[in-house]
Length: 154
Image (cartoon, rainbow, N blue to C red; front, side, top):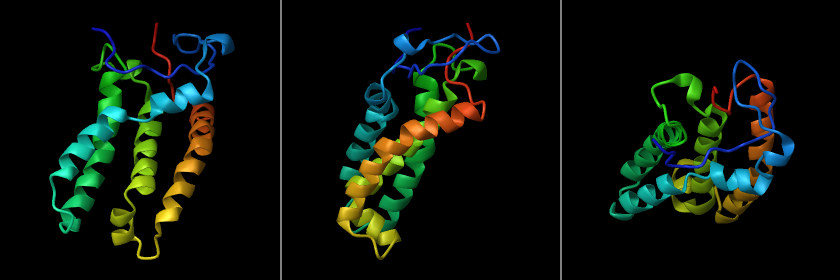
């Protein structure tokens, strides 16, 4: 089965039977960030929440919370051709995509975030989006150092 979503390729030595990715074959940071952003999930989120009245903040909030694990599940499924094998899952991409979704919500849904954090202002979302572009690659490196795999078992 072909992948439904591209898998991020970061430099990594072959370890535990995993596919080796050299620096010249790895995604650039910009390419990796675009693969971490779960655009399919964002599209579904926008469609569903677009049908919910704006004054139904409780439903909108819990709907947003529900999309965080849905993002992780979608990325786990869509980036592997063997989703039943946990060794094939791009675990770092799963975690970073969920973080990217949260950053996107904070950056674009200021009314929703303001409902949870009363001191939240719209400009803060821009700061979150800007910082996420820096912290997603840093998070990838930290997760790699912690031993979380990204590349599939060969």
